[in-house]
Amino acid sequence: MARKRRITADYFSLTPQKREELRLAQLYPERVTAVLSERLSASRRELIERVIASRTQRLQIAVEGLVDPHNVAAILRTAEAFGVQVVHIISESRAFRSSTAVTQGTHKWLDVHLWDCVAAFVADMRAAERAVLIADMGGAALCEQSLKARDVVLVFGNESTGISEKLRGLADGAFRIEMYGFVESFNVSVAAAVAISRLRWGGVGDLSPAQTAVLRARYMMRAVRSGAEIAARLLREEGTIP
View (cartoon, helix red, strand yellow):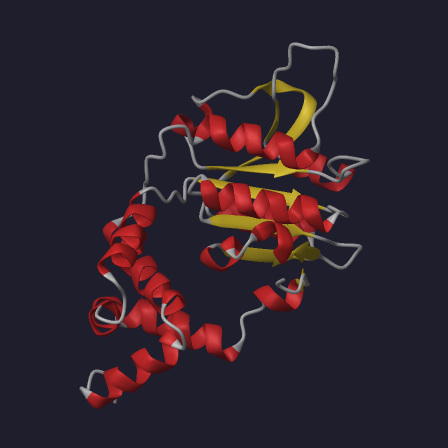
């Protein structure tokens, strides 16, 4: 039986190895793809292409102050399954933890950004012209039209207290998921799954050609064991890298 372990913030830190992987993908995406593609089966290459074709940057997901590592992990897994490439984790007052038993490895295909400051997170979204919408029972009903107006990030709050007052005061708006029974709220991971599935139904991707090329190279390096090291060595041997 595989050993269960917790994922902490350290897992998503930009280590020297990850910096090198990102550098290679950004500077030499076509060459990285070329030298690594022969090390993957045709079916694996086809899967990578199919996944990239459905990836979105327009919709992003954020969680704030979640305590249960299974909830964090479930949201990461759902985001990946529906083609959401970027997930933000905001944790000002407690250490972030997730669980590999729930993510089942899907976290390695995502871009996970960690924030220890709500204001910095919102400022970054503003700079990207991305609307910050918080999950709230008093918000407007979530609808598929919300993605047609502008890029958005949906934020889900703490299991007990919801969105913090600080983030509530900085957000661009609030949304709710309509329910038709006696229950008044969903578990946070279920709420995220419902919202993501509604906005991602059909799985249409929206990456630019440049974003597609970079992500393809990154996925190739992730799919091949020691892929970044192999790509760097081969690119040096052929003279692409000085």
